[in-house]
Length: 355
Image (cartoon, rainbow, N blue to C red; front, top):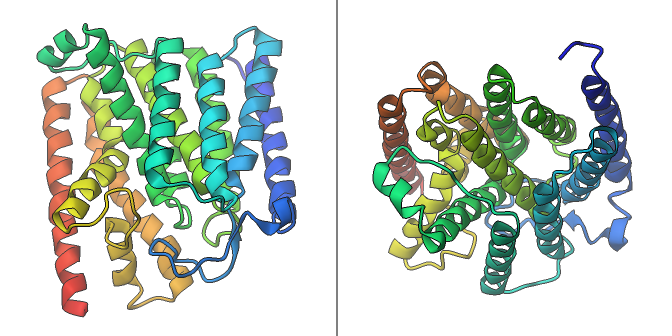
C-alpha cells in the first residue's frame, strides 16, 4: 500500500469532494427545502445552541457516501451494497424528522426495526463470535442471531442520534472509534476494510470542520442514523475479520454509545417517563450544566465534547495493548459500565443540589 497507490489517490480525491460538498450544502442550508432544515427550536430539552443551525450534515453525508461507494465500485469492482442500502433507508427515515415532518416515536422505531431486520436477512449480517461461550451457542439459532444483531444496531444507531447536537460530541467520538478500527484492520492487512473506513473518516473530519468548536451544521437525525449504522457495521465486520481479537474489545469501543441508550432507557422508566421521548437528564447534559457555571453557553457546548471524548479515549486506551486478552477486555468493559454509573450519579446529585 504505497503512497502512490490508486486507492490513496482515490481517497485524496474523495477528501477534496467532501470539502466542497459540505461547503456548498452549508452555504445553501438556509434556502434548502425552504429553510425546513434549520433547527431554531431552542425550547426542546436537547437544544443547547443559541442560534438557528441547519441539520444538513446527513444530506452531505449520504451524497458523499453514495459517491464513494459508486466510485469505488467503478475503480476497484467492489460494491459495499449492504452499507449503501442500510444507509439510504435510514437516511430517508431520519430526514423526515430533519424536515420537521412529525412522526410518532413508536412508528419511527417500528420502521427502523423493519428496515434493519430486512437488511440483516437480505445481506446475512451476522456476528460470528462472542467471547461468552453460551452466547456463541445461542447465535447458532437464526432467530436469536437476528434479534442479537438487531439489538446491537438499534442501540448504536440511537446512541449516535442521542448525543448529536453538541458541537463535536458525535463527530469526534466516531473519529476515535473508526481510527482505532482502521489501525486494527491495517495491522492485519484487511486493506479493503481500511479504505472503506478511510472514506468514512474523511467525511467525519470534513463534518467536524463545520461543527466544532462552533457549529455551522448538525448531523440531524438522518446523519446520526447513517453514521450510527456505519459504525455498528464497521465494528461487526472488523470483529468477524479479526478472530484473534477479543470481541469485548469492540464492546469497549462502543460502550459509551451503547450504555448511554441502555442506561437512559431504564432511568426514564424508573422516573416514570417515556423511554422514547427526549429529556435533559443525559450524562453529557449534566456535564454541560456543570461547565456552564464557569463558561459561556457556546464554550460549555464544545467543552462538554472535549471532556467526554478525552475521558473516553483515556478509558479505552488500556484495551489497545491487551485487545487479544478476553479476560482483560471483559473486565474493563464492565468496569467502564460501573464507572459511567458512578459518574452519572455524582453529576446527578450535583444537579439536584444546584436546583
